[in-house]
Image 1 (cartoon, rainbow over the protein chains, first blue to last red):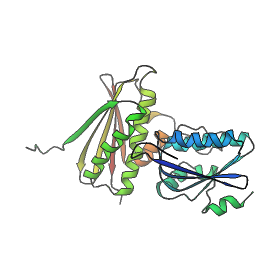
Image 2 (cartoon, each protein chain N blue to C red; image 1 turned 60 degrees about the vertical axis):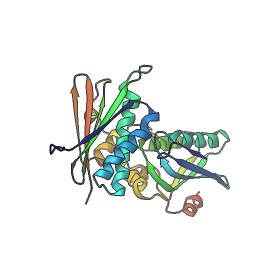
Image 3 (cartoon, chains in turn green, purple; image 1 turned 180 degrees about the horizontal axis):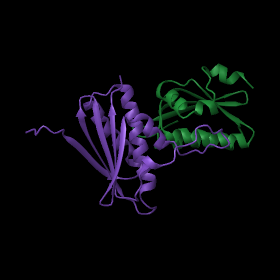
Length: 119
Length: 144
C-alpha cells in the first residue's frame, strides 16, 4: 500500500514468515505518511500477530513522528508478549537510530534473514 | 536591481499537517539555491518537518487554527538560513528539557525527540518572541 503526497510517499509490503510478519517499509515516513504505517501495524496486531520484523532497507527518510510510531507499536507488542525487530538500516535512518539511541532499544540486524533467525 | 543583501523568499500557509509537503518543497528550493548536497537536503527536510509539525500540533489551541510563515535566504554560498514564525502560544523550544536517551522501551515515550533532532542537525538555532510572534531561525550549511 502507498500513501502520501509526492514527497511523503511510504510503501509497505507485508509478508508472513512463520509466526512473524515482515513489513518492508520503503520511501519516506514523515508526519503525513506515518499514519499509514501505524494503520498497517495496528492491523497486524488486531489480527493477533505479536512479532513484527521491520525491514527498513528501502526507507530513505524518517522523522521523529515515524520513530515515535515504531516505539508506540513496540510498546504495544511488548505488552502482548511480542516484539519488534528492525533490519537493514541505511543512511539517514541508520544515523537517526544511532543518534537517538534507538539502536540500543532495537538492536538492528544487518539482514532480514538475521532478523528472522533468532528466537 | 540588487542592493547587495540576500534575497529572501517567504511562504505563509495554514499551520496543519496537510501543509507539510508544500513547506518542505518550498524550503528545498532554498537548499538547492544554497547548493546543499543531497544528504544535507534530506536533513534539511527533517529540520523543516520537526519545526513545522511542532507549530502545527502545539502553537494554536485546538479548534483555533492559525498560520505559519517560513522565510529563507542564502546567507553565503553553501549556507541557508530558514526562519519559521507563528502567532501562537509563546514557546521557546531551545529551553525544553532534553529527552533521556538512556531509557529502555518500557520507559521510552513515543514523542519528545523532535527538538533534540533540531539541535543535532542544524548548524545553529535561535529563538525570539516579538510582538506576539514566535520566530525560530535555523542555519544549515553544507557539511565538509
